[in-house]
Image 1 (cartoon, rainbow, N blue to C red):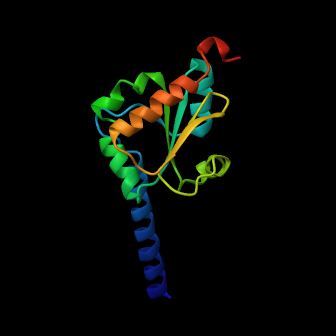
Image 2 (cartoon, rainbow, N blue to C red):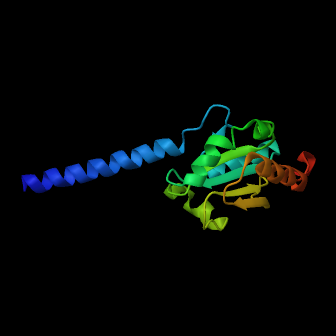
Image 3 (cartoon, helix red, strand yellow):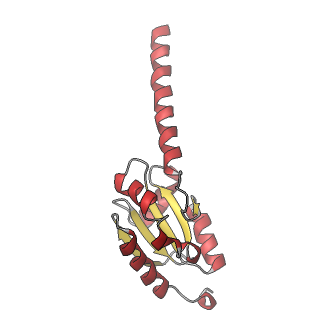
Length: 153
């Protein structure tokens, strides 16, 4: 009985330690990154309030291409000039709180980057990673497709 309890404690402790490390890694952003929200609802509310398009980055700590974009694309000099033109949200697909948003936007592969207006209407998307230059082109196209702030009724 004591041995069983010990093994159960050991397994649960290891599981919690690994999951905690992944959770922290998923929310750890390099210097120069945009300010990422981690709530879908908060991001849409901020987009609607500000009139800015919302970038929904569906990602995970275990996803190599996701982590590469987090480290080299979002904080890149090319992308930095777009930080204030959007509301940014980093949504971990392993977090149950993001399950509904992932389903709504048809996330089946990550990174999945959906650009929406404050009401959640798609302005463009990207599935898979890219370099900063290609990502900037996606951001420019989304800004052109976005309604003007006066149109945000």
